[in-house]
Structure formats: structure tokens, C-alpha cells
Length: 135
Image (cartoon, rainbow, N blue to C red):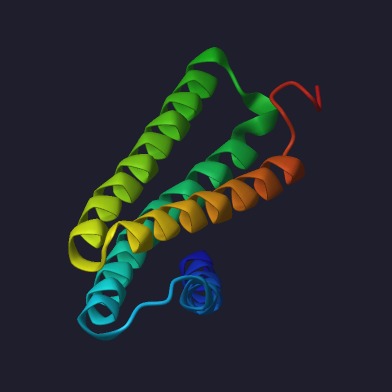
């Protein structure tokens, strides 16, 4: 099923991403333990938003050839709201990580997460048609 496929992809991406994060953010002792606990919490919440993003992309793809103003407006509103939720999540975890593991670790987390999200978004946008492109 699509849900199982998404779960598998998120699992593989999550493991690869965790390796990248571990190579980039170096901590020791209690700061390290606190960081990884918070990181795992963040990833669980991020995955929920990721599933919502995939569902939104599917809705866009399935309705692309018949997009009317109302559907287009709703997809755009949902896309922007999802972006706000994602930014808020990163901001929230920046504060939590800063408190538990220090400013440097929180800043590194935020930079890396922002970079990875930007790369993924650019890749997706490169592969989907703009509204009206295929008319």
C-alpha cells in the first residue's frame, strides 16, 4: 500500500539522515544523550508532516489536469500552512536543543535541517509541473 511505501522510504531516509547528522554534530556525554533524544522526537513529528506533504503532492498530481480555482486555492493554502508548520517545528526544536545541548548544536541542527529540506523541496519542484505548464 502507499502508506507502507511511504513508511519504508521515511525509514530509509531517516537512517541515512541520522548518519549525516551524527557526522555533522559532535557532542559528548549528557549533551549528546539529550540531543539524540530530542532529535528522535523531532524526527517523529517531522515524519507526520512528511506524510502530509506526500498526500498533498498526490492530491496535486491527481487533480492537476482538472484544477479549478477553488482546488488550486486550497492546495496552495495547504502547502503554505504545511511550510509554516515545518518552520515552527524546527524553531521549537532549536529552542529545546539549545537548552539541552547548547547553542552550537542547536544552530548546526537548524542549518542542516534547513539545508536538507531545501534540497528535497528543490528536487520535488524540479520533477512536478507548474500549474498550467501542461495545458
